[in-house]
Image (cartoon, rainbow, N blue to C red; front, top):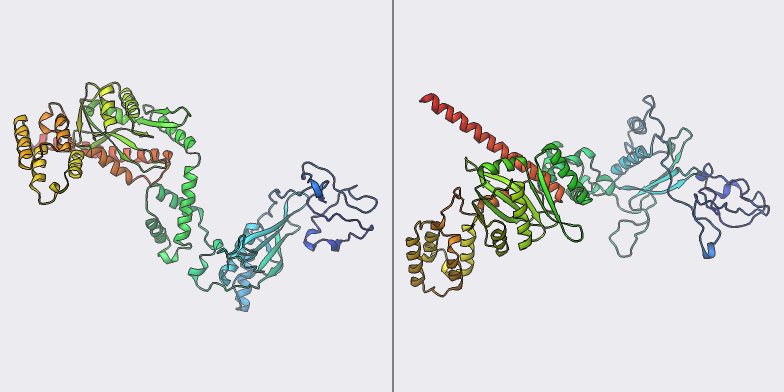
Length: 545
């Protein structure tokens, strides 16, 4: 039977047989039998209360199951005139000079359970074991009135043949409530059936001694968000404590914390992402973004252009590069960057696009939305890799734009296709580089190409035949339009490489957006420096003349 939180065996007894000795001493104050709950025959019968528990079935039909969830107990108000348990223990040690500095003697009083836990945890550090919370009991008001703090080796392992440290150790303290809403130690057992840790390194591996304070957690979170490695994080934290050996937790604990932080970052990523976009829009009214969703309302493509990128595109958007080589986010989604070059020949970022796939329809949507967000102006030249899907999308959405291939990708494909001819000491490699980089007229290129094919008997080579048919996309003499001295997607790839210094691997999308904003800010700061430097130099030249 349950009588407001106290279970009583279903048995009949003579009146008065159910004495106070029937219950443990520490539960007497928390026990109360409702009026009318005891029948004339002496049998305690439970009142049916849906708020207290639910009726069980079969053999226990008619009995109520105790609800284990209770309210937080009221804590005793702190009094500056009251000497704390830790201070009393230190004073006692100073007098006797024997045993441990912290000792949980019977009757030691605490303001809260947290204070009692920290006190016993300090004692366990001195002795060489760990602690954890164990059994507790609720009173009739559904508030905790008893709490046991036991050795980490107490109890039995949940599974046999496991590596659990539980071996049935009896060491523990039992805490009860006092009349002034405090807690006191009613029982203390200090007998261990296992070896105790002797060194500081061993003690730190107990779970209760791996605590990392919230200020250190905030520091670790900021460092990990900015892609600082785990080893460097531990060294940085160690510098705050003087040396790494004085850090009060292990690198294993730090690794566990980082995994927990990653899980917290990944939770509700979609909601956080929209909140970040809304914040970016509030800080930059001209910030523009668009989202493409699939049939199941999931994000397929996310694209954005900042106001700074929009302004720079109007001035420097005649020649751009687009590349999708970056894949360091939680969803392994390719990330593409529209990059150009300013009057200082610095890379400038016009916009970014995160996509689920690299299909033709996806690229069509990206190019169409990019042109719309930058005011409808088409670039004169766009440089990409040799992706067929991207090529078809450019022909469909940017028909008046000249499409060039990245020279670096052409040379990479040549190295993969030509085999032994592309060795370090091969003359073929030098001749091919000369054709790609130095032939400025069509006549020179055609003559050099035919001469190369005849010398190495490559007239029927499939790769050379294929790239010759599309030579207008990569040969130097087929320019005819403004390219701002860009011959490859190296500027996009360089921006992607810079992103890796900001983004932690596997970061969620909302963190990706935040770190991208930091990259954009750093690039703008560098451009402002170059602008200021140009103005100063020009003024000096005018003054000298």
